[in-house]
Image 1: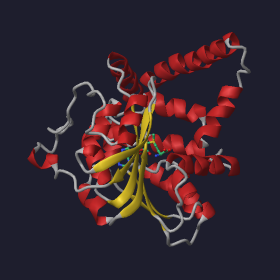
Image 2: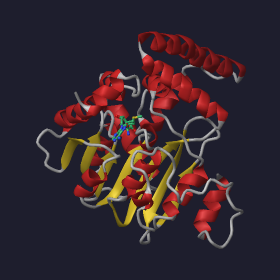
Image 3: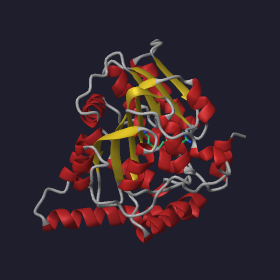
Length: 318
Ligand SMILES: C[S@@+](CC[C@H](N)C(=O)[O-])C[C@H]1O[C@@H](n2cnc3c(N)ncnc32)[C@H](O)[C@@H]1O
């Protein structure tokens, strides 16, 4: 029995891959094009042609597919065998015999595996590292394969304090078994539908527009993302400044930042510009799930000369 399967059986992990397998049924040309557009936008219009692109936690495989269609050489991996199967399925549908897109089983918590992959121009990990069970170790591992001057994209759930802890409880309940799942889905899905409807009616907006607009953002489906949100466990969160400092200490410069005031993800694009500060995990208990010793949880300093001008502007925006 695989570690993944044991974690699922023990109620400690959401079956992301099962959700992605259902999502594959609705992947069409428009969703793929929207995923491509979202990738290009995320990297500020970067040219993907010939770039080495690593998709950590590829899920459905939609963004690996988008990167490949944009001309990148892609390696995708995921910890959930069903997610790996989904990514393989998309590869077989669109790039069946293409040697420049490889798909594997692997974990963001396995530094030896990640180091064995070599160096990449772009490392992309959307909504993954906070679901590993050891977010800071995964954040550290994600930067290992970034080449000098390469780009790293991470999307990490926003820390909302007590509210985030409540959501963690909901997700844990979902993963406990059928009853927990029924309670969570039966409570929150109607709540999402009706609260959205009410907001739209009060703002005199057509209610279906939120669903159409959602798809336009990344080509995803709001319904499958609701399930991913409700069940998505393990679940960790971070404030934007924590992620910013974490990667600054490892020789990365923040290039782009999108923050949310809500429960969703903050998005970061970093460039590897310097050597970094060694491996803080070397001196840690390997089973620890806490932040490494170099994580500074104080409130952010006022922007000052320690940040580049661009970083300061982005910092102020957040
Ligand atoms: C919310 S989904 C995001 C999928 C994809 N990146 C996207 O943007 O659509 C999270 C994915 O992370 C994967 N995952 C969780 N823990 C992982 C780990 N340790 N290593 C690699 N992938 C992991 C899950 O199996 C799941 O497919």
